[in-house]
Image (tube, rainbow, N blue to C red; front, side):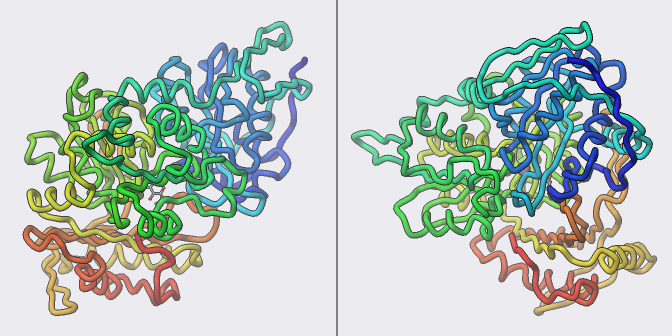
Length: 558
Ligand code: VG1
Ligand code: CO
């Protein structure tokens, strides 16, 4: 087959957000829209692309297979020598990271809009990951974006026909050059890696029980996303769980109409099943498998910020860390600071980075970071360079197997030892963009004016005095690159925090995220919504959020 050069026109707005380019499916269906972006990804890699190997796969949502086909044809035309493609285009985001690292490829292209709904009327996304297995850093995504604003042509091999439904290697001659597509088992490399990281025999004994101890009953929910086949292989085939221990384990193009975001609102099904059933543990994952939610018996909820802190305090039970040792910890800025207390107690470095997994990669590559997380149900370690939902569930089960305690007992003991960071996030989804931008500008001005520091704010009988307020910026300690304007923060004298930022993953309108974090040393068994009510009220007063968004209640509370 022969290479064809196609003339094309620029599309505006192909700027990758927090995690790749995410738009409605219909946007990607516009003539040459997807082709332009793929060509720009390859061009951003310059000469390295010729002769390279790339990994390609996605979360199984509508359009994944069609876009895999386009990537194959455009890669062939641009001199890529080999693609590793997940069977039927299926690869979870953590699996892509794992495979890039294992086979030392130049990078990978992940087709997902993560936790956003799928199907013809919903979202699609394309993300580039680099040779360390992590999401491309800002300077690379900026370069990709710059290329999309100037593109005039792309190269493609339109007659190349490459089926991706069967595992195996296919080789083609493209204008005299060899081009190989290897269709790989979607789960094999990832599962093999999990078996190295964890002691599966101990987790299996926990799940199956023994004469002395009843089985530990788990319920694992894939929310019709990509993790289904991974969960079947790991939990059913390897760990001896039964079919009734897993649910929604077949990837569907529209996620069965579900919003595949593992939190108390969108995974309410799982929460109800665990609450009403005889389960000791529940876990859910998002569409592309990098997020996780953990709940215990009676649907006892573990906030992601607490999950990170508990794991940080218990890494010694996981074989991977017994071998590699534990370096520092990190969290994204809006994430509650529970892990900071574990870092202080264990004498480890702690890093606070902007929202988005790409900011953890350099620290991991430099050997300074072992475990990190985000309040948005992201947890992961330096085993790969993406957050990893299944890894988090296995880590919890390994810790539970070692401690012999319930999820609730583990949390309660943790709070008694370290105190508790109460945390909540209010999301106001799909608001009008202009008033939200205006709100952020005015609020930034207000909190950075002289006199704001030291001002007092009261509600519900509580008074908070401002200690620091800014628009968060971050300098990467490894390459000294700077990320500005990463969210407005107001930090009070008692350590409580209000954070406000606009989402960078939505496909239309603006989503405002309000994060509230407050520390209590003694009173650790309260209800988060009750404990945080005064601080939420202060946040709404100071930001005038309800006025600007026109909403008197958030869309989702996590
Ligand atoms: C959200 C979360 C952020 C996460 C990102 C990608 O970004 O807040 O913590 O890293 O999604 O997650 P934003 O900009 O909408 O707040 V996922 O599972 O897309 O890959
Ligand atoms: Co995700």
